[in-house]
Amino acid sequence: MTKIDVVEHIFSELKSMGFVRHRHEFVRNWLGREESYIRVLRKKMRSPSVSVFRTCANKLIGYGEAFEKNPLTKVDDIGRQFRGLAYKCQLFIDQEISDQSASRP
Image (tube, rainbow, N blue to C red; front, side):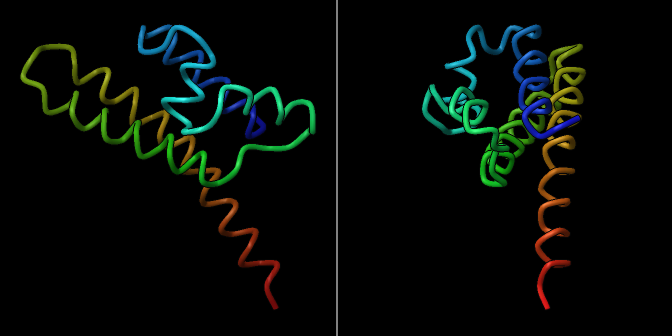
């Protein structure tokens, strides 16, 4: 799965769970970027930045923890789903850090 595929997957999951309705809403609120961010990445054949994955992971973890602490039943399932999505972001963050470390003399 490419970085852009992971972003698309997270969007699809959040949409299916009812937390976003539109891509522009996801990009603005969950990635912290302008509406056109994904479109520009595709056009220029680039990958999302590490900061985008950090922003998204932090939001997913924060909301996930809030849902897990909620005393209502079944809400902790949402928290686990959010943490799973955050883990996917973290994999790309870790990979980028590893690649940067390997490229240094």
